[in-house]
Amino acid sequence: MFVNLAVQLVVLWALWTAVFAESGKELVGEWDLTGILSYGVMVFLTGRVVRGGDLQMAVASEIYDGSLSRYLLYPLNYGVTKYAQQLGNVFPNILQSIVMAACILPFMGSSSSVDLHVTGLLMCMPSLILAHLLFYIMGLLPQLVAFWADNVWSLSVLMRFITMLLGGATIPLSLFPEWSQGALAILPFRYLFEFPTLVILGKVSVNDWLTGLLTCAVWCVVMSLLVIPVWRRGNLRYTGVGI
Amino acid sequence: MIKVQNLRKVFRVHKKPPGLSASLKSLFRRDWIEKVAVEGADFTVEEGEIVGLIGANGAGKTTLVKMLSGIIHPSAGEARVLGYNPWEKHDAFRRQISLIMGQKAQLWWDLPGADCFQLLREIYQIPQQQFDHQLNRLTQLLNVGEELNIQIRRLSLGERMKMELIAALLHSPRVVYLDEPTIGLDITTQKAVRDFLLSYRKEESPAMILTSHYMEDIERLCERIIIIREGELIYDGSLRKVIEQYAPYKRLTLHLQNQTLDESSKEIFSKMGEKVQIQSDQVSIQVPRKNVTEVAAELLRKFKIHDLSIDEPEISDTIEILMGGKDLRQE
Image (tube, rainbow over all chains, first blue to last red; front, side, top):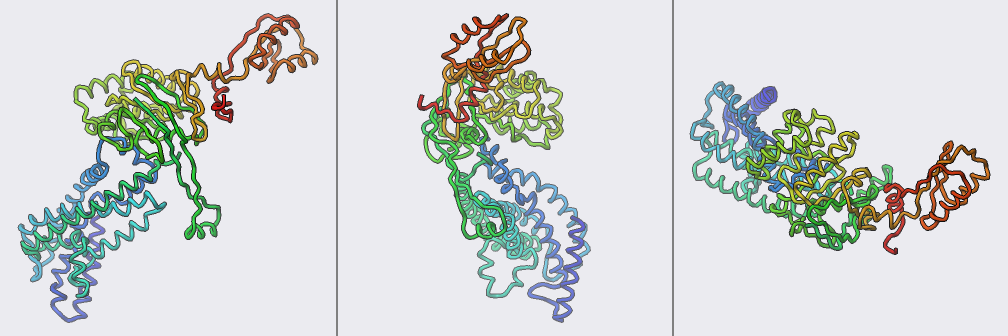
């Protein structure tokens, strides 16, 4: 993980210093160089928390190899059980992210475009909790296609790529073209990575923060309403491997 | 406790010939076949009863068990287990059933048995006192007290199966499905598992459905069997009756008194029955059931016999005949 972050930092630094040097401007969009590098570091760290304990292909694998059967026998809700497992796995990521943030951020220098503050950290927590839940529910959808399709790996990877790109895990969404901003604000992706990161960096007002939390919660409900019928329909097709 | 009416399950299976061109073709047009796994199953199982479900591979035994445990949905028909529709998966229903699959580990491999059982205690909400008592009793019965703190993945197959049995019975289920619980186990462990199941039945009286390819499991544990062939239930009744009713022959074994068998003697045996086996002074003949008395009398007349015994055929032989194609529904 430390190596990942180091590589990420080097790439970000090389890319953005070149962009700033080429443009000859102090600001790109609303970001100065230190600010955009801070964004890069923070989105990497919050991303690790949001994706923490990532199920990856766990659900699809259980459908394919029949391990799902045991969960169908237990008197418990499969979705909640899997989320509990994911929560159990997220804590090492949280600890690592805190340690790395403490190591790196003091050396990032000052920026006019970001304001790291305790208030931002406190406001970020509910944003991260909701983002973690939304990421989990959204991740279930492509995996449940395993009830119908023989291989959902590529679909899952495609979903992951779209989520990262439109969620602001590579660059802030404010740098995307003007025409796309309306759609990006409505879609659920930005609440996964960009929103919690901007909250930490002190770039979200209290009103926008509350609106963001509410929107994220609504997306959690909407995604759950999509997942539940897919799960039920999929269950009708489940064979538990073999005859 | 278990009531099944006209239960049917049809799987729709994609069929693809070998080769690259067939693979490419199947991307655009797929050929499907319908495979009937269970066809119109009707039966009931009462409390304390162990019913053996027998059939060849792919006959539909496991599918039937999966339907009755609620894992898969039927294509048609009804089933009530403890008054519940299994595939509606009510928690109250799932708290009272258990499924042990000999071919599929259900415990968490990275955890020791003791931790797995604690997890199951939480899942089934078993009161601590009841849990301690039941765990203690089951570990003693299966003699695995010392293995409780060892990671499941590091246990032998037999020890793992014993752990699976404990895990499945911790919550004292009223209905237990056992899908080949002794598969791959050595003879000693098979016997231990069978003895354990018998003592568990005696104490808890659950309804049990057992599938197994080992006839000894069936003979030792089940008084009643259901034979399933290509999805259809072709026999439902007592294990003994299946032989009396459907074995078409008995086996006569004679020990001859210091007598050398010449070709003419062998010819006589061949006329009297089938599958003649001669080993020094011992002769064994398979004789049609209705001719047994007549053949025995004739043998006693023609040969000097030291001992003669008439035996029922092996249960496994009879069941093999039934599974192989004899149609009982017309009899």
